[in-house]
Image (cartoon, rainbow, N blue to C red; front, side, top):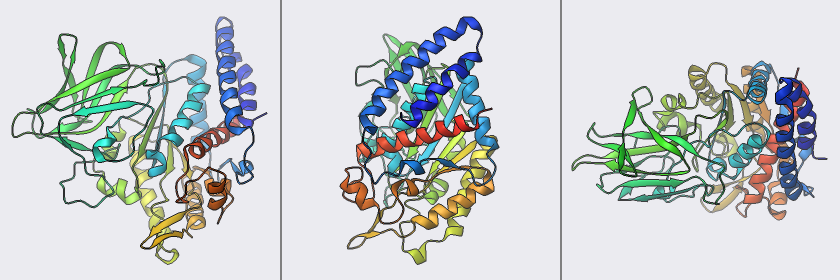
Length: 432
């Protein structure tokens, strides 16, 4: 039996014992249904793992204290036992996160075990001519300018925040519309919508027309965002922008809000992003993190920081940048738990093609030292792959792409399964 399923089965009676007698049967039935649906999913993906996948290495490692992680588990248990409150998870990285398959698989597996909250931030990434999260549909009208955080440009950059994206418009017909369930399901809905961004003056602002009514927003100065209360639950909405001549509006994200209890999963990923990208170019990152207030931060930044020669990679500088990010998160959410995701074995881009990235072990060591310093966990993806010079095996197994840097869709989903497997195994082992 898959280890994740074993821990789900063990968790069912423990959770039910924590509830009043009248509430035990409905919860037990719900958990069994969740277990059965997840069993079908994992059977299809994990029936025969290739030999290159070292699943025995898919564990959470705590070189120091684990108090923050155990407090996170306690909050998860309270959520499931009472059906009240929210648990917030923030996953930050580069292209592995922007591709969305990895974080979405983690989110969907966690949702299958707990209570589904909100799906996090949306952004029309096609405005920046880059790949998008295919699990939702988002469209725009009007003319927009959206320089990418990590690319050189002569275009004036927006103030980036927690999404790492920004798009500017001066079009009077500008709009952004989204559909949360393009597959026809009813997984996601919202009763509120937060528009993240700013106008060149108070004369430029977003608005929503619902039937014959124009919805008014509540402006929140502490997060500089516009909150709309929708008249009924919905999985789609269209935001329009009032942009008088000579003015402009910059959109940095959308946040559909349901106000229901559950796990809210927020993913922040930009292709090519390294720690300085987030720390030095996203001037509104800390402010926007107040919208997340994470209980758990998954730190998966490192592959681009290490994409240099061995002699040019500076572990102390890398650790100091992470200390800055951790300090920022703690100012917003002092009790947040942290999990570092080590780099995958990979190649890096060089002028004449691709060269093997020899910094995987150095990044792993730096993250272990940070984890000991801050009482954090480490999910050692480098070891799960098998260590140095194993990415070719993952490519040959159809789990990594030909560039030997990124994973395939199936590979990313497998990583999401393995991560949650490790998380649930650690939770079960250390539950009191």
